[in-house]
Amino acid sequence: MSLSSVRGNCRLIARLDVKGANLIKGIHFEGIRVIGCPEEHARRYYEAGADELIYMDTVASLYGRNNLMDVVASTVEHVFVPLCVGGGLRSESDVQQVLRAGADKVAINSAATQNPELITAIANRFGAQCMVLNIEAKKVGGDRWEAFCDNGREPTGRDVVSWAEQGVALGAGEILLTSIDRDGTGKGLDLRLIRAISDRVNVPVIASGGVGSCQDIVEGFEAGCEAIAIGYGLHFKKFTFQDARDAALGASMPVRHFAHKVEYV
Image 1 (spheres, rainbow, N blue to C red):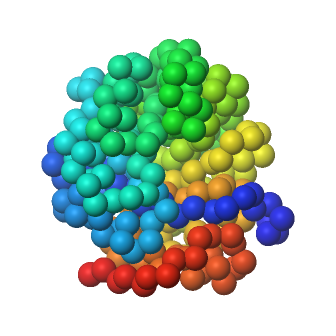
Image 2: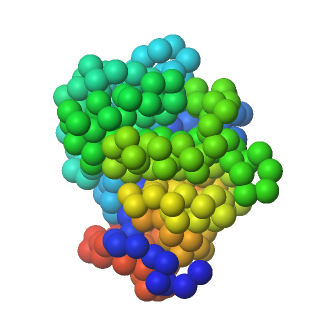
Image 3: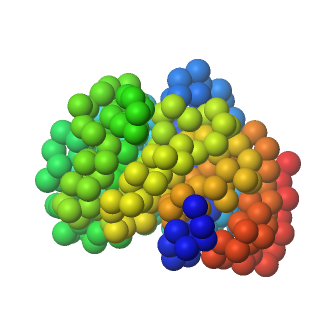
């Protein structure tokens, strides 16, 4: 892929998967390892230059509710970049509650697969920029992926490309696209998956799952996504935000220049 495939400004996003009071990271959404306090890591990544943050409640769908309200409210006292929250949001009322807590947008997966009209309802009430369709994709052969829900536990029977197109037609303003096969492995993003979706929708695609190096980030942008959500690579200190930004700038990617170089330990 050439640089001509890169769309708009490219964003670097910290993804924080949360279970209970802990920031966690698994492999293929399983084998969870506790990383630490989510609010402390959120503030650290913000100060290190994250363009946005994503909080994902990994057990919310299991229990039918999102448990991050206090975490979100605490985070936005010190973090001043857009914050997206996902997990267990099933209604307009749930979305309103998390927005009031301080989130800027929401990522909807399970509830949208069961009730696609919810996408339109959220987009109409809160704006398309607020409605992020969260797609958990698992390869099922060739260039075919199936959408899963309930944090990668349940198949939906939906083809990922068709579901992304339908979600955008219903009003989704962004797609958060996570490869279950690559999640937590550090083996690089699923570039074929990114291309398959980016070529078919006209909204920003946030690629997630598998980033283990700065080169993975450059290749992800070249594949056509406009943002990359990073968990494994940051949590396990494979690189810093500044490393990622320098690599992207070195490859002439249109990422934001960040003046303050903050290294975390």
